[in-house]
Image (cartoon, rainbow, N blue to C red; front, side, top):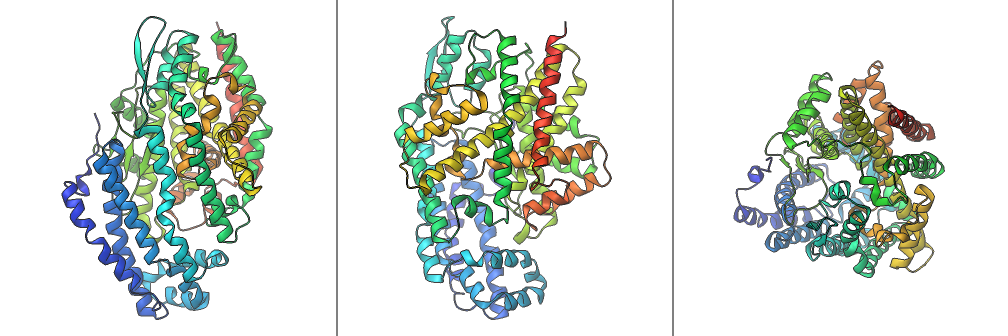
Length: 588
């Protein structure tokens, strides 16, 4: 069983505590540069000191953040994680003078600084971005006031964790065969695919969503806090909207978001057709959202983590050697925590820190889906490895916008490999279903959630109350339009907005799954079809880290996200897969 080895950071909590004591000294040193950045030598010393502090922060934060996620019920580690976040807030407060002071010195002078020194030269793009954003940077006093509210930014995420995980109790249900099972946030989807009857599926679903229904007002108040924080930010910094504020920093045109939203909204017919096919071949009188986990073909194949890792390696073995090397490095023992355990954070992620090998958290359940999740997270970690190997610290941190390109590219490769290996009708159906469900989940479903997020922010901009009824109405309407399903008929499903942690943790994050999926599909097609320089261009994106604006990075790799045709290509791919699935299902 693959487990994390966090000793590369610290041998124990006591050693972590000792290093934490060094952080205030670094913070005070950075604060001492206030009013002194106008001299080249001080400017250089400040950024040298900042890099030293950042390296310590990465080490401290990585150790406690990862440790805490292994068991969110461990109150000692959770408290230390909160302590770390408070220290980060203090750092932000003490250094809030930086951007206003740099802007006050003028772009010409600052660019002279960065062009006169090799070390400072690595900050050139960062400075260009800052001056591009200068109309949204406030005075030093105003920035200090805003920074004082820093500790409140993590409150919604903490409240959400408490409601959804820490204080929530897993439900037990008795199935139609008399068997009693415990339904958790990690296992309920696999249970929905396995339980014997429609009533059993309903029981499992209701058990999983009970916590969201029973605490709907608390979840709504927590999400309202997220929305109000976004509103306070965009109004204080003179943005046009919360969406504009979220996209402006990375120079992403709002048209990219709206193109995605509109293309998905206007092309829901293939979804309804797919649901009709599923309903027919599953022999269902009525289709529910939780029926999506039922398999069209009986395939009891289990994929233990070690087998999944080998399958992933096999799927990429003929690609560029440098690409293969870093993908394998991404999932080495010690850097993947594979299986669920009590208190462990749900879902999956790759967490990377400059100067350290990235870590992957999984909740592997031996299903085909979990094989794709492994490939997905390996893509993230390999991206981090490529970036850290080729970029200095100031430009190593790539944006979320391009992050999902690396992860979904791997999924495309794995799917093609498995389809080629498939021999039986059951295997083909299973893989086609997985491919279609992948587009449903990554493109359509994430765009639906992004549209929900957009419309919820619209309510705030219009001064409308944020209640569980208001939030649920948005979701009910969207599910009706996308899937032609009335989720009010499912006990608890209208509170699915409370089930999505990204809405609470990372506002305006989820749309990037869909944009990245669209970009990666185009890039992968170019690589697969051996388009000249396609792989080299893709490696260029992986190695470029955060050294350019993400829309530019995607375009250089072959995907223009300002063009609706890039998104329409996903619709075409989805439609062709549904065609193929229907054809295979009708075969004798």
